Length: 327
Ligand code: AFP
Image (cartoon, rainbow, N blue to C red; front, side, top):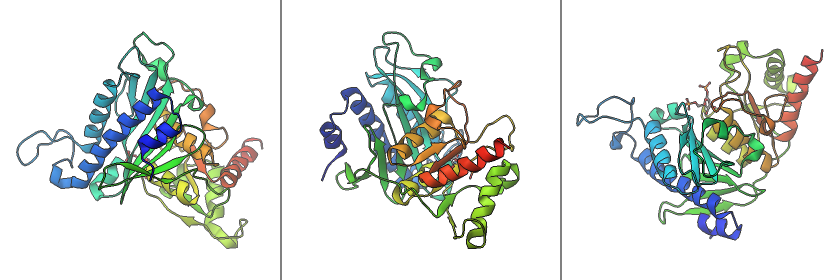
């Protein structure tokens, strides 16, 4: 049995990166416990409401955000923290050499229906050691990430992580409260017959995405010549986990539902860390035409269309878009 601490040591992980991963995953244990208590912990409901004792209630995504922020601010290696929940990044220890970004509870609308949610994190190098970090320090392409991962709070709590060149998974053992390695060198098949998309947005998609989904729905009666299956967790962390476990394609494509947003998902808190995991597991991650990890960010909260998963299927979507755009 290999624990997370033993794994990080065996991989000779940079000690600062290892320490930050430990901080995030320790907070993950607390978030996992709070989720298990559910309504009993008085944590459900909207932030700002009062609980039965008349105390101020904190919604769990706010609580998760605060727990991560507080713990990381105390980590001496962490020069700054950016959260999907906060407008601006928070400077931490100027002497630190790392920046940490997180989505504290991805899929938070799933909490109220007792479904899977997760914490996604990304670690970047900090270039201006000794000076106070600013939002602009975080504007690095995803390929600069030193490590990335997520905690999935599902029927069990799992950690997916990449620190070197492969992806590993740990399961949180409720008895020992340790993360135990359960999958080494996770690999995604290049081909798949499973996809994930919120089809209710069909009328807002671009023509090549509509064509792609039409082809999948037509199954063995259409040009693909075989049937496809659809799954949607409504938490990216759950859909990506399924893809790392058994392949598939996940997309939240460009749509015109909200014309000022390029897509729903955030580049720095969702798309970049998930893309690093997916690529290191042999899959692909694009915005439909370009590699996500190459995108130079201009805003810490920018949104991006996402098409990721089994390589051949992601390439198929890319070809449809390129053919359409070059017409
Ligand atoms: P929330 O964190 O606001 O619940 O959003 C989750 C998410 O950003 C992503 O994790 C899901 O894939 C996607 O939204 C689900 O979107 P739909 O509401 O369109 O199903």
